[in-house]
Image (tube, rainbow, N blue to C red):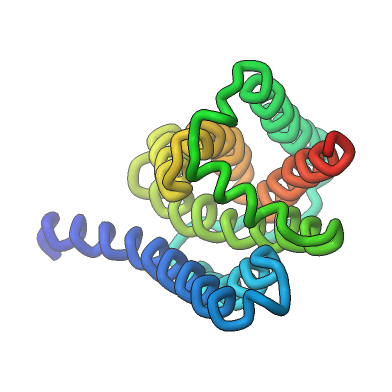
Amino acid sequence: MPKSRIIFNRIIQLIYPLFAYFLIYNSLYMLTNNIWGGFMPPLFWLGVSAAITIVVIFFIYVRLPIVRNTKFYNRDTFKWEILGIVAVVFVGILLNVLFTKLGILQISESYTKANEVLYSGNIICKIIVNCMLIPVLEELVYRGCICGQLKMWLGMWPAVIISALIFGMMHMNLVQFLYASVMGIALGYVYSKTDKLHLTILAHGLTNLVVVLTTIVGG
């Protein structure tokens, strides 16, 4: 197969999980929230959209030609995996403190609107959607589908950096771009070193849980 054809196929293989994720997730959210928004808060419908999209993206993910470490527990690497999770959570907490102290959170109107959706439900809804469904969906897309493929083609660090920037850009506001890009590097590093998606899902979820609980206590 000509090299140009291989490159084209790889680009398509990289784009279509992102396209499916963006189209299905956002379309479902707009549809459900516009029709039934008066019955439940926007976060509930975001969770419904995420749950449905997870199913679609999972079927895409399992068919991609990427390395997957399916061994949940490895005695020799367990302590380093735990340290990796703790490090990601620490980075998330540090970024939140830094952004708050510097007043960065207030500079983006679109970030404020996004936050209104993410914190529109009760505590159970916030935890289920923000700390479980969204981490699963985003890790499947950005670490599993995107970083996993790029690592095979370009190597570890190009995969980590490019997938992190895509992760940041897809949030479509400056605050979340900065936050998600840095978090994407931390998550991508853990994923690339272990090939274990469940580690980044756990790290992502725990980071969001700390933020959610801090917001509730602080609010």
